Length: 136
Image (tube, rainbow, N blue to C red; front, side):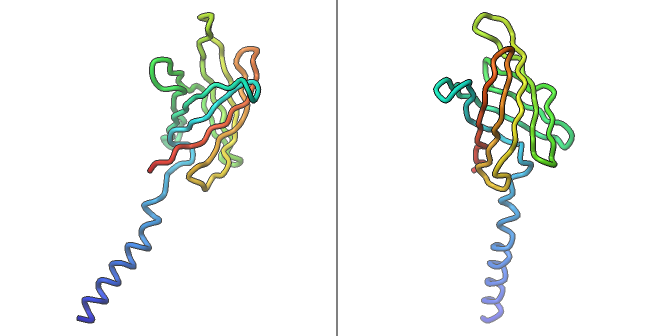
């Protein structure tokens, strides 16, 4: 009987120790991010960013779906967790504007980390803030 109680306690202890290992989220960039961008506090547009990291390159898309904009020239500086990428955005006029986006990942260890920064689309400049979606 004591051996069985010891075995149950041992298995339970192993499960408690192993739980944090399975809770890891992977690379800080990977996942979906939601937020907004705009030129002022009242002029904001919601957007979604989905990013992936294959160990060498960042890939992804802004606003997945019918009007998606693939990431181009995406780079990460892991020393200070700054991110740069470019997209081609269709304007209401039908023309395309090249957008340069530069941001920094904050709250790196949090499951609700943020990506904040600035963007330039043609002659328009503004800021953005995204929050990473939880995986669970």
